[in-house]
Length: 97
Image 1: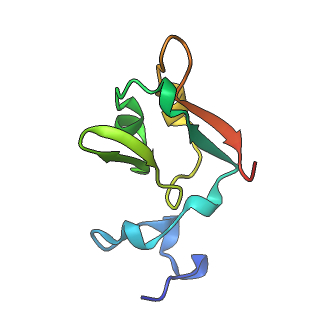
Image 2: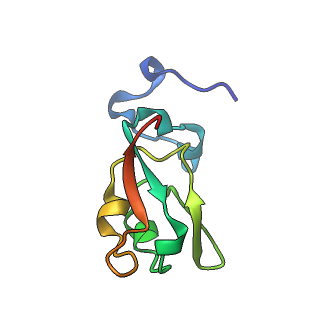
């Protein structure tokens, strides 16, 4: 399938076809990206609940990583992460570092 350019998207970049959001990889938009620190993760899945882009990857009820193809770097996951003993499991870093 050929991906559309921004000029071909409908006004407001509205997704008009059900299930087609997977065709629009938006991860290149971000300036910051979340970094997962597994040893600080308590598996509360707040990151998964609050992520507006469904970028938190889970398996068998546990967080296993981040899908950077769709993560826009909003930082909500890091904001909501309680972490372990005050050490967050998700921290925001500048893209490319």
